[in-house]
Image (cartoon, rainbow, N blue to C red; front, side):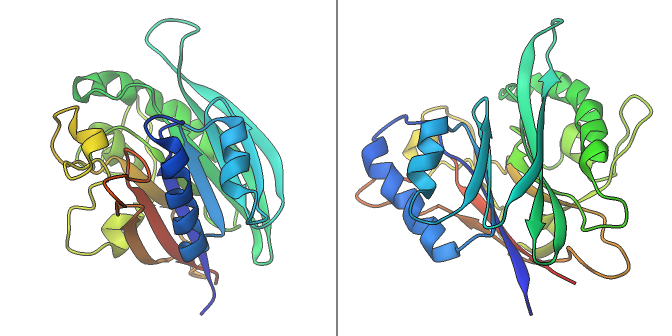
Length: 253
């Protein structure tokens, strides 16, 4: 069965031993062969360095990038609202992927509010994100694929809102969480104590990076067949990033 392979990874800019980290990220891309990639915390030239040998199309804006095996059209972006007027508190980027299976709306999102107690700030951003997603989706087309670093746990109001389990400001959304649908029996942690780059912050293991898929139509396109935590192996105590990545495979039809 044909599938669409999706990878999301916060690349931690060029922090730490990046000359050693970069080849590790490339190795994962080579092994996973993703069709779509969302990078967070990434520099424009860094994207080029990571993808130059693989032949991806890519777009970049304000520390965020989407990459695809196929051409990207209708590239657009917004900034999630902050507490103060005019404050940028998380970029969101999107494009239409011109795949052999039809046009795929692909979105990459993050929030700048990363502390656990800042949930009230992230919560305010979710209706704006939902409105943006609705503007990008294609009616009766392939379901929206949204990836990103959301800086919060699955039981938070923010993630429950995205999954249709909670309303905010009299609005609601519905996405399928790839890990919930097709992950293994583990926690799916992407911010993990075993990774000493993230351990320095003292927080417990957390699942804060996600692949979401819009509600599938009756034709079944976009059903989640597999989901794994990736980029989660070290070499000589060097990790690919301070985050682990998430990888999923989705049905084509």
